[in-house]
Amino acid sequence: MKLTVNDLYDFSHSIAGDYVASFTYPWEALAGISDEIIRLGASLPEDEYDRIAEDIWVAKDAEVYPTAYIKGPCIIGHKTQVRPGAFIRGSALVGEDCVVGNSTELKNVILFDHVQVPHYNYVGDAILGYHAHLGAGAVTSNVKADNKNVVIHNEGEDLPTDRRKVGAFMGDFADVGCNSVLNPGTVIGRRASVYPTSCVRGIVPEDHIYKDKNDIILRRQQ
Image (spheres, one colour):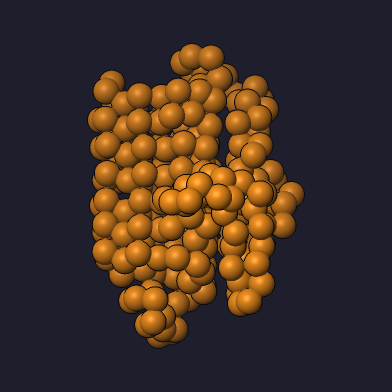
């Protein structure tokens, strides 16, 4: 299965693209997100971004509602909307033209440009690619019930992450239906889709549709 950052992401659609591209697998990027945000934030043009608090940079043309909560380090990109009640817990790099919706919580994430997490979503220790979308109530679970380190299982090969907290990794244009759960270490390939109310564990290949764990089909080409 295609699991590398090159398989999942178009690096030109995030200011953190070079950072993500420096790794082989996306979970390797999680540990340094905070430091990367601080490094990038210091170089952002002052005529385009306001530094609204320590280590928090918000594009001047972004729309952040007064009741949203943002903790640094954080970058909010151009034309992004952060809606009422959003809870950004820190270490969040949100790209351009994104939507962070009401009651959505972000923690230690990179959202590429045009990502939508618009309604009651939790996204933690995760990277969502260009135009990725979570339906209402869909969440990325990032801790196993036994609290052990997350291992990625790929066609008989076990890839240790050496991390207790690992969420999901969604490729460009991946889409997850309403009220679905992506279990720790789940990878959703480019242009893959997940049916609503699914409980996904493991890997959904690119250009496939996840109906349930026993029914993952190739998307019909248009």
